[in-house]
Length: 348
Image (cartoon, rainbow, N blue to C red):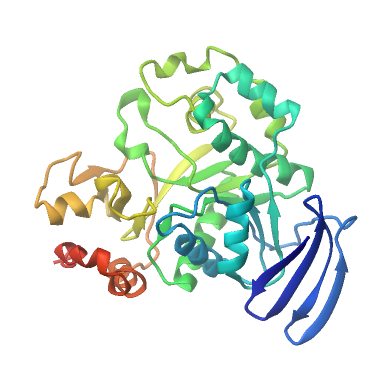
């Protein structure tokens, strides 16, 4: 099978047999290349960033979001696209333009070790695929001695900043995580919305320091781990990480925010209502749909206070910068979202 992968600085053709890459050839920076892949070893060079981009849908703006993540990632990085559906992979290859040939398509790992974990932890069956995708980042990085990496839900998250500015923010977050030895460091999606014992740390835009912790994470699973979250659903791998966070203090799990960052967590922008559209401001997360579109100012609807545990970054993101990006790249180009003019004055 020949994959015709689009790269911005040339062309790439990759030959695979039964899904196993054999060799690749093409032109990059006006230089022809031929590389055998079958026995080549994946390595992480010093100062090289590794990104795992997870993708399991192409509806709505999923591919646009995915392309934006590809644009954010610097050219000297490696990208591993975790995609299980062949049709979705074909759409990515057909539509997405990568910066270089250091992009690799891998499937979620479903070996006996991970299957035993799913059975022991009794995760909801509908969340098995997501759990396998998350666990694949740990398994693959550990197998290839990758020390640090980003785990990104690339089909339904959007950092509303130009690529260079977005990466500058991520780079500072990554440096902080390495300096403080934070094992899992994720953007605050739901943590501040929780209460009491139910602050919900989640994957999404997550920096990981691996240090060969996969076996450790899997070995401590037992069927009763979920009792501390009685009444909370769903039983997924994100909640399992909350269990790790609550019970194992030597595994450092934290969440962060970036002041003034406008962030989307949905492929159709507003189909998930106020949850899909958020902006981090000083000590709160604002939800512009309720705050501006509906004119509300209620805690829990228009905003929630940032939890005291959140590590806050002030990275010179302008208050209106995200909205300007959103309009330039999406709203002004799609008549279906012209009604967003109702929140255009978000910062007034």
